[in-house]
Image (tube, rainbow, N blue to C red; front, side, top):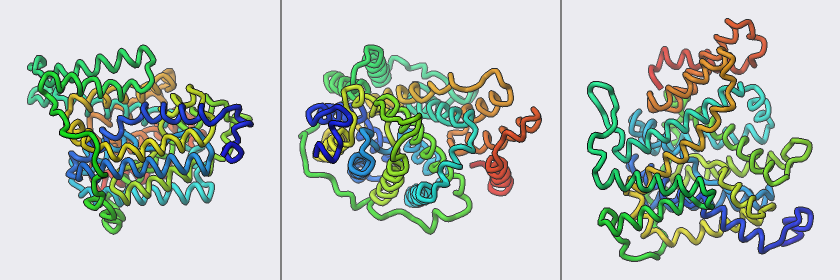
Length: 434
């Protein structure tokens, strides 16, 4: 084992790697509550989604460990889970089976792009401004969903949305308490702050009678049959959801690449500013996404929370293998998830905090350049306002090349960006809003 994972080369040992893997698991265990909560609103079976989420995390994280030998964990991404449930299924009225088909296709395309090495060309062609804008916009979108689910923000006939005047309602106060506790833990740099915040909120909710106490803690894993192999591939090839597939692919492609580089950089694994075995790492992501779609969950991606394990000393794939084993054990704790996942006061603070973390990329946008600032702002603001990640991406790809041409910087824009801009224009003309 030490030889396979090259412990000596990375100056680590089995005990350190195991502790790092457990640390990573607890920092991202909140996804086991969030994924069923979000996809459950789309009409999917809570137990099946829980197990599918755990299985996709197990497969992706284990492969990352044994194939790529990196201390990086994978699981369904929060942003695309929200997009899947609220925009695609609830907003566009697309059956979740068809949406799963779109996720699967995006995984296949990601796999092919990685194998053929076209991935590098695409990554290099995309404007840095739009990459950061998409990430930040998803953060705003997720946070808005968190406020909405908690009923802190409600519909208004005069202003479309407004602050709930009944802010003193017990369930809203519990949400605000959970948000405050989680923020304090984050400020104190506590490991697993989001997960611990959810647990503390749940315990307080049980004492105040707002959260039911689980009848038992352990059980056999729930059946995955309600979602297993229910993806509609034929429906997913419909031209009308081209932008949905593209959105899943685009976000996964750049979010995953950025996370891989960020975590590897912190672990000191970059060589000449390049990521060794990058192809293997990206292949595991695409395979996990396809597996997740088969079992009934949204796009799988690398988690930035892996940095917690790296900070604890994790340097090899053994960290990821340990995290995968923790996810395997977690499937026997479904009674807890079944009780807590349906309580907005527990899950909403996590959505808001993740939104804050993702919006951090705002500082990297070139705000002094108006031809960069406008497309970035439009991309970001349209995501929460239109309740669609795809709409924001499409608008950004239309406006960016136009403004660069107007600024006399058209030659600096990759031809692929122009092509995508034209495609999105026709998408709006012939198929309406995305």
